[in-house]
Length: 191
Image 1: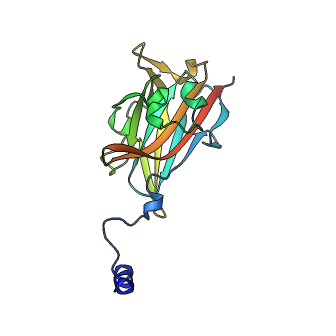
Image 2: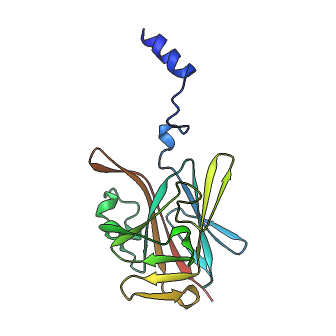
Image 3: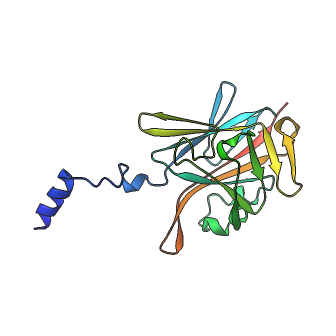
């Protein structure tokens, strides 16, 4: 009987998802400036103090929590076994950013993350979307930084201190947060 049920399920797959469960929350991220592409892999990169893009590839509609800070404490713990909600940049409730990133910016804060997601072309926090070979590629341009504490908007060309970004995918299931993937990058600026 069990073999019959397995055969039946393989012949008539569920329409609830077309992505294997193991891919839930998966993502690839990289930073692009000019002709250079830098993978996000818990590393340090050098950029000119000029606009850049953060690009995510998702296998299905999903989102990523983003800790952006001038404080390195969250980035330094990106490889730790600490639950991400206990990391300094994820302690407080997330911040809402503008639909479709019309002002081409990110919010910088030491203790609260933003949530960037893609549901549809109309409901997302990215400035452009491409769907290529089943992958959802989401582009987030960064020309400005909103400093949450000083409540000001700073042109990226004026930033001199390193910018630390940590990205986490998760879901809230059965009254607890389940983390899928965590990656970080430190951006240092050169003239």
